[in-house]
Structure formats: structure tokens, C-alpha cells
View 1 (cartoon, rainbow, N blue to C red):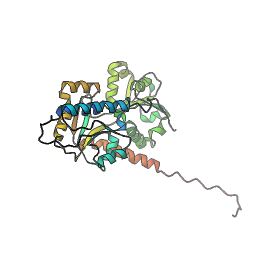
View 2: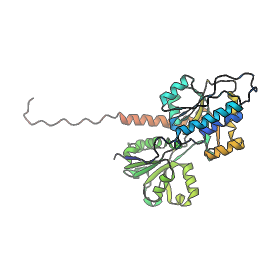
View 3: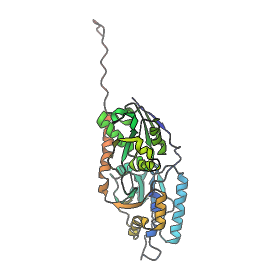
View 4: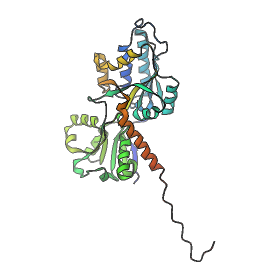
Length: 333
């Protein structure tokens, strides 16, 4: 059965700040040196780029305006050469061109975009956001306890709700991978109907009220929902869970090397130690930003590669040849 995909998200012009990425990096001014603290400062301004994929629920022009104000403030108070206008890229080829041409020094991107770019660009250091004490997300497939649904196989032809958020960018790739391996079909062909929403309540509550058969949300998101409404934890159950995955990164070009780069990196690491930084991180549901070795992405990148391979394999499957029509006896062309 081919699923009918229904998107209940907001119009595409609305975007959401990724949990702490933009403001986290914007406030790292606390770690920047003042004018005269370095013997010489690279005259090239620090330039930040973001992929279109990390924004949702906020107008892009508003995001640019906020970054521009920040840049002007830093340039005036800290004397650090900073480009006040962030680059927001619509696709991976645009990102690759900018990185190769040294047009941006650091980028906030989804892990899927990182997987594509990492083949051609070296990144270091790599910063990951922390939420609820963890730098990784885990996806849960939830159903109602009264539904008698126990396995993914039981959801054939059923309805599924997906949360549309930066941290949910790997939810469907993970689900596709699992379903193709177990049932031979991706989610869009396994479920009867798939809906999406940017509001997690509109994903979880329909399952609670028997309006949808199943949903996929992050463990952290579901925990928050249960804290607000304990009945959700009592009435919904998990029938499948993903490994722990990194969904997005903020990373620098490995060859980014101005005189003040260590100050920049330290500012990112220590953001959560300042009162102002803690307040901002709290607003954006992010506890801190921490640099980690590239190896921390290995298991996530393995899933991304496995999904791409399985999807390509599905797409290239040749249909079985049809039997030739039977000609009448005695017919001689």
C-alpha cells in the first residue's frame, strides 16, 4: 500500500532556530579577545553559514536581522573582524561551493548534509549540542497500549505521525532502513497514511486519543510531554527504538586558522559557564555546546550510508518481465 503523505506543518516560509546552534555561536563573543589583546588579528572577518535545513518556525529574515545586530555589537565592543550577515544556503551544492572557496569559516548543518560534505571538506573542530545531558537523540515508535499493536509489522496500512524538527531529521531514514530490512518496503509504502507536524503535541496526542495508530518522536521530546501529562507515559508504549544518533553539528573548516581561533573555540565551549549564556541556552532548549572527535559520528554516518544504499537498491530493482502474450495456435507471423 502506498502511503498518503499529509503535511500539517506550517508553510515553508516559517523556520525554527535549531536548539542552540545560532545563538550559541553568536554569543561566543565572551571568548573573543578585545582589541589589542592579540599582537595581530587576521583582517579576514569571521563568517558563519547555516543550511536551510536547520531552520524551522522562524522567519529567515528575522534570523538574518538578529545575526546582523550581533555582528555589529561584536565589531563595536570587541574589535573582532566579524561578518554581520550570515550565509544561509538552500542546498548541499551551495554549501560545498562556499566551503571550498573559503567563503564561510563555520557552518551549522544537519548530519545528512555533513555526510555529503565530509567527502570533500575536512572539518575540525566539530561541536555538538547537549539536551537533557546527552549529545545524542533516540527515536521511539509509540502506539496506544489498548491498540494490541506490538511490532512494526503490525502497522502495515496504518496511520503514522512524524514530528518535523531538526532533531527528527533522521527519524524517517531510520524507520525506512528498519522497514526495508524487515519487511522489504520503506515507510511510505508500508503505512497507509503519514502526517507531519512541527508541534510535537500534534504528533503524540492523536495516538493518545486513538486518532492515529503510531507516531515517531525523540526520547527527549516524549519525556517532556510525559512530564506535562503523566497519562501519556501510562497509556503509550514503545514498540521500536533507534540507536542513539547525532542529528546536527556546528563545525569549522579544518584549515580555518586566524590568530584568534582558539579564543573562538573556547568561547563556544564555555558559553554555558556564563549567566547570560545559560539564559540563552535555556531559551533555545540547549544546555551546552561541546567539541567532540569526528569518531563520535561514526555510528550515525553508518546509518545514513546504509539508508542511502537500501533506498538506491529499492529504486533500481528491475520489475519482473511480463509473460509474452500467447499467440493463437497455428499463427505464423
